[in-house]
Image (cartoon, helix red, strand yellow):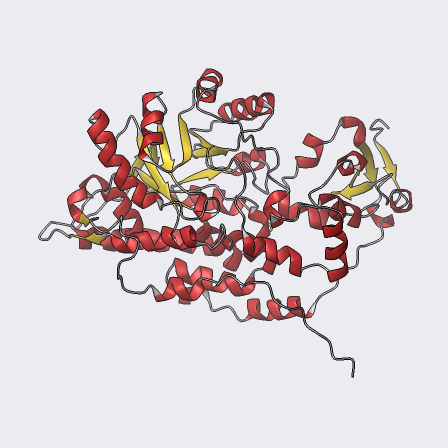
Amino acid sequence: MASSGRTYSGKEVAVHNSRESCWIIVHGKVYDVTDFLDGETTGGSKIILKYAGKDATAAYDPIHPPDAITTNLKPEKHLGSVDLATVEKVEVKITDEERARQGRIAARPPLSEILNLHDFEAIAKYTMPEKAWAYYSSAADDEITNRENHAAFHRIWFRPRILKDVTKVNWSTTILGQKSSMPLYITATALGKLGHPDGELNLTRAAAKHGIIQMIPTLASCSFDEIMDAAAPGQVQFFQLYVNKDREITKRIVRHAEERGIKGLFITVDAPQLGRREKDMRQKFEAEDPSEVSKADQGGIDRSQGAARAISSFIDPGLNWSDMAWFKSITKMPLILKGVQCWEDALEAYDIGLSGVVLSNHGGRQLDFARSGLEVLVEVTAKLKEKRGLSFPNEKFQLFIDGGVRRATDVLKAVALGATAVGVGRPFLYAYSAYGPEGIDLALQILHDEFEMNMRLLGARSVKEVVPEMVDSSNIHLHIVSVPSDNLYESNYERLQGARLREIKNKL
């Protein structure tokens, strides 16, 4: 049925509520999504059928960009509009758990009592919807790498210099030739609307206000153009790319990003398959009726990836080094590999002429027991100096790390060890999830204040004066070493839960 621009009544849409004929309403438009159900084995078909013949907008918005359905559905499946006044409202049941959550939101401390990035995480943990918290906070397997990302910073100690005139300190820098008010950037994180209705736009606006760079994710809840349109005039943005199996789609995305003014393309290389994020997975089990779980499992449905699985099946596991020449042929943007985890791969990236690498383990969400980006940084700078005579920071080949950052001191340690800048992800999600745009604004101001204080205490008047001699990294490769406990981080960390019995109701 070709799109006719016709307006349907709610009753007309409602009869198409089966696997054989499945229509849904999103933002007042009617779509025939029957073909999406064919061969669906990820559990997505059950979700779609739940909204068959109904308005699916509320379920669609948090995990899809506005243009996802129009981009991925054939034009003839765009059936027309619907008279919303005739659509039966999907009854929203307020559960006891949701009432309790709303009570916790009302009990949040005022922003004036939020002193650091840990505090945002503490409040977000109790005020976010459980599924959203599970998706943002989850990591791979036993979450060893996730915790190591933060713990690694504790094995680096400062060697401050004294009697420097630190009346004025300047912590601004340049990243890939672009100005930034701090040696950090907002790294790419998926599904921003899980934490707040404005999703990634919170980050775009805050980045503009504070003069830092946002890396736009492929899997944003907002569309790429929506984020670009929200940017301030002249605002610098990078783009994180998951490479599609269909290279024509990848080519179109890359060229469109370049046309819109993106200043750096960060190609994710550590996710040929998603890691097992068990908090996310277990949340999916517990959210459904036991009988439905049983039926789904008997049907052979792959339920192994929680919220992450449905949005990532397009990623190409065949991506390899030979593809880098192709990327060079389709864009003039600086190319950076995001997810490098050893010096050999960093050296290869340098040798083939890429602009840099992000030493990263995907926030601990991929291979558990992968080392921290900070530890790999120490290895990479030493080996690239030995093999190619390079010193860092290096304008021609820039090193970045991400994962585990909670303080400006964490960033300064990485800069001292040769990083151009550091990516920060989860803390900013927690900030706006807990307090909206005012939260992310305060989070960035806290970091500015921390940079100012710690640069003075370190004896560095500029980022260029934050040098290797200012840190002791001799313990970075020792994974069992006594360091003082980080009480704030540890109190926020939610321990993994094993399988447990369901509640047994006493019938007597």
